[in-house]
Amino acid sequence: MKTVIKQFVARSLRYAGRSVLQRPWLKKHARDMFIRMPRLHALMLRVMFQAPAPVQQRVPTSMKNLSPNAQRMHRALKQAIRTRQQ
Image (tube, rainbow, N blue to C red; front, top):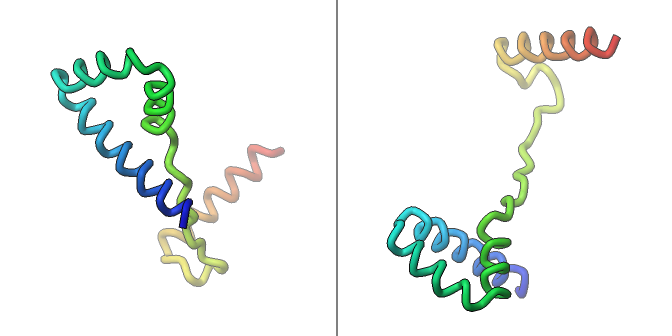
């Protein structure tokens, strides 16, 4: 439960921070406010520019699940990898 709350707060802070960054006058006021609180400023910067967690996509396990175009692309990529490794 604690991690869910942390994720929600971090996501909300990122959203709010990005909307502040899009408005120059609000950005100036926020910067002036956070300069007085260095620890909070550092925390906000870390949360704002933290990379989101990578999304794991489901990859088809066999070639038969791919479309014909995707199969051609897969074969071409495999061939390019093989030639590059030699």
